[in-house]
Length: 161
Image (cartoon, rainbow, N blue to C red; front, top):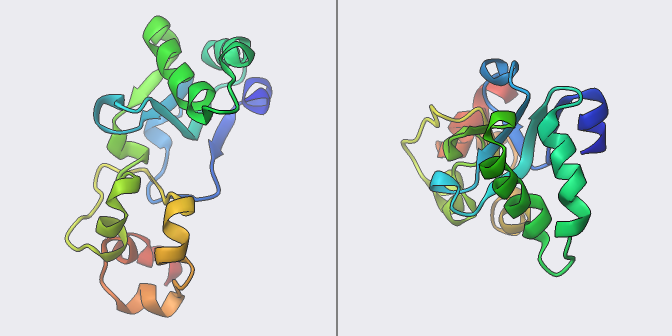
């Protein structure tokens, strides 16, 4: 958060991939995506876009220590930005859950085994590595991506050919 405050830019967890440009969001002061429909779980911190000195990132940093609870990771990382977004909506652009976080962790079978979804609303995809690695990612190969028509493989194939 401090780097985003000082420099601005895009932060993504290592298990997030982009499938379209962030261009439509680049003029916003701060952007976060809903985790679940309507942000039912909060605002996910796996993708963050920030202008330098964004008022929202400064607010988040200001309240972080107060909200921090090592036993409830999501409090300072997902719930706090959601609460701040409700209190200070003028400082935050909230995007639809499908923009960055579709499918959710409970839709990994749809992502890695399903068919017929073109992810037309996605700019990025969070792969939820802690839940998907053993079942899907550990044995994923370029050959599999090129030859097997799953939703995930079709979404990323153009980047590996």
